[in-house]
Amino acid sequence: MTPSPYQAFGISPGVCSLAEQAMQAVGPAFARIGRIREQNQLRVIKALHEARLSEAYLGGSTGYGYGDTGREQIEKAFARAFGAESALVRIQISSGTQALALCLFALLRPGDELLSVTGKPYDTLQTLIGTAGVAQDSGSLYDLGVQYREVELNPVGRPDLDAIRQAIGSRTRVVFIQKSRGYTMRRALLAEDIAAVCGAVRATGCSPVILVDNCYGEFVETQEPCMLGADLCAGSLIKNPGGGLCPSGGYIAGRADLVERVAGRLNAPGLGSHVGPSLGFSRLIAQGFYLAPHTVAESLKGAVFAAALLSLAGFVTFPDPLAERGDIVQTVELGQPDRLIAFCQAIQAASPVDSFVTPEPWDMPGYDAPVIMAAGAFVQGASIELSADGPLKPPYPAYLQGGLCFENIRLALMLAVEKMGVVPDET
Figure 1 (cartoon, rainbow, N blue to C red):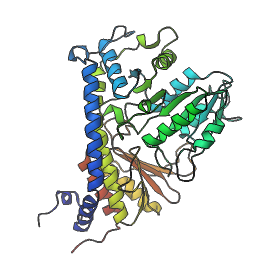
Figure 2: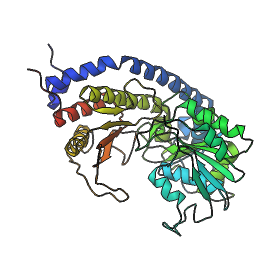
Figure 3: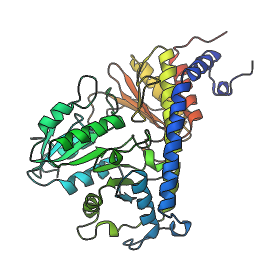
């Protein structure tokens, strides 16, 4: 039998054999990912055609950025691909949290209410929202007189439509939906969930703005939030829609009047979307966007393979290998602190950048247990690139996400299983 090329990286025949079993099991999931990628890729190509993207305008602008035709073409393509009226795509937005903050501060006024219908949001958004008696005078929404409430998901992880309808009142100005599950064990929302929430909100007769945190979810399905009834969605270009090429940036897409209000918050009222130099990054943004459906599919294949391989190795994984997915995050419960450390160190060792670095747990601010993080990425913090992290506390979960190339993700997972020593070698 011809040796597996993965054995050149020190992987035993036993782990290679287990990986082959995993590959045989994930065929249906890979086929589904291929169909989704095809539809999304064609939609992006059509959007670029309709925007009349021209190489002549990809050089970018400086200073104020007035009359940046390339930037306008890219924003038109984003809007078309996301089913939106308009889009704001800017290198000056450095994170998904910043993109969402721009939306919330642009839309909410003192006395308004922000209603999260997917429970507690990410930690960084909780700081942005603020709470009574904590970090006062930080400029949070709470400091500015914005009220906040949340509706938990139902016991099976779906939006509680009855509770949402009952919670919406005359002061509810923004209904917030977090598509990805982030660092929790809840399921990521699917397109049908977002459509159901939008329908429930509209049925109340009230007219709050429906804002979707789309981070980690772009191009995972064939429909984006604005196609499903949302007014706005936002995310980061160093996640899915940047295709692994963007060095920074973020986007907001949705209703034209709301996008312009967000642009006013980014720049200044009256200036709105007219200013903002692209500083020579238009080419990377456009090419990353073009590659995004393919890159997301590679990442999803890696997540599916991880679920299958680690399940065969005896671990609890979520989602299951063949489950429908709404984001690119894969979780595995490793059960022991040494296994979590070994897992993350193997992911780092397989990375194309900083493979020689050995991550160790550390006391990360804001967490109640040491955290270990692995990320050998071309772009710092790029979640569409392969990374893994987790807190050193039971059940010792590892959160795996991203990956530009399936073979690299497969190698990383095989190295992780090897390093944890949970599969006997074949003799």
